Length: 63
Image (cartoon, rainbow, N blue to C red; front, side):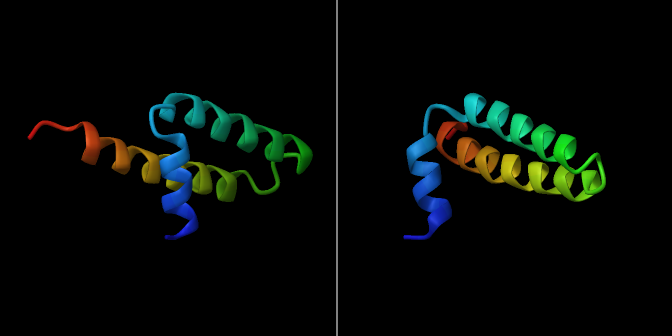
């Protein structure tokens, strides 16, 4: 089982809170680096949210 699979399993049912945490973490990094890496941080945030979103669509989508 990969690390991402373990994270998805732990976060199941709390995707919205995880998304908020991802946003806060990105804002923290932007603040500490004075926005120097903001485009890379934004990309990382999008990728993480996409991973969580894909799992949500697979388990909660119509059949």
